[in-house]
Image 1 (cartoon, rainbow, N blue to C red):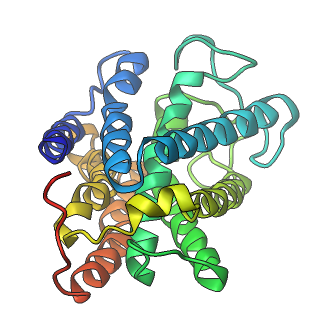
Image 2: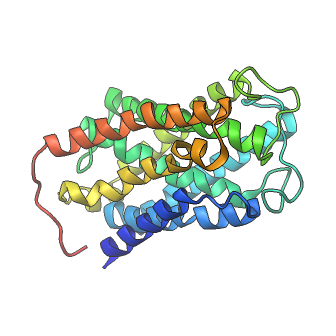
Length: 272
């Protein structure tokens, strides 16, 4: 039943991506997009159990939120930027807590893709391989940021870079900071899923199809960027984000899928 729910939520995310509510309030956009959060909570609970899922959720959300609090108030990591009042929802210490929920599904999809590539979906990933998964996930999330940030900040104004930047109004420091942050919490998450409690569930071998919703969700995150020239006009910023979405963010997805199905059929756990 949970698997069916995941596929239904994935379909809803896809349909939302085709029509990204460009004329609606950003608050509605965030509320609807967080369907992805629910999908990943359910999927991760089937893979690693609820205690591990909640740990991953709070680590990604808290790390993202407090890093952005430091960024907004002290220019830490990302550079000088701020969130306009109420545009992205209520602010707490200058940052909209609800908008930070997206850290969890982005981090989870990156984790699953990275572990698929190294063959670690049903076993511990340690040492160099653990660091490799974290780098893979951070690269995937930073590539998403390259396709998404300029439109959301420069065009929609969900967050503002007062001094601008060379990449359609976004500074290079933002992307470097994003890579450092996502790599950091991906390492922490890697240790969490290696715990004995998590491994009791993760060690159950599952069909490759079980992991498809989590991998495809990352690709669906890119649907609005892919269709942006059609939905919002063929401007340089829209064409750039569309090109990155189509020809860069698809690379980690393809790598994960090839690695996943290269391993051949595994024993499916049909009861989950």
